[in-house]
Length: 172
Image (cartoon, rainbow, N blue to C red; front, side):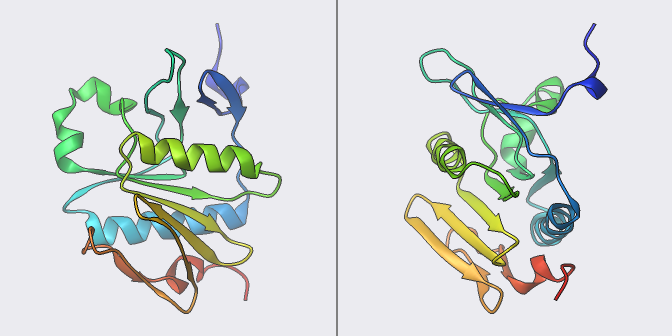
């Protein structure tokens, strides 16, 4: 019998396994900040969940499962699921936050972002702690927000915050 302790976290894209990078302190600080931001701004509208496995659909009957660093799912989608399906939702989150890790493959990240958007995510936030930038992807394309910027999104008017807030726990 397989134990969860013995197995690394694995994501799947079109049936191919991709081990998740082992998170470090920088990753944890930024992840925690995003959890606080999304929960404080959108807590009445949806669920903010770290490391939630999402079965986001398949191409040619091959599985695709991602574990975003932070997922935000609107209440109407969350509560439309039976309780047992909420453990691993069968769709992409409305907002997926992916925090870059050293050694992560850019090509995989690009495919992952495209798949999130193709399967229902409204926003994908690709966060680079090294440059303290958030690469924001939606159906309109990509834009970059840096620490001196204020993040705002016209479709999600509730989601507005100073970008510096997600990097405030990092070393100066």
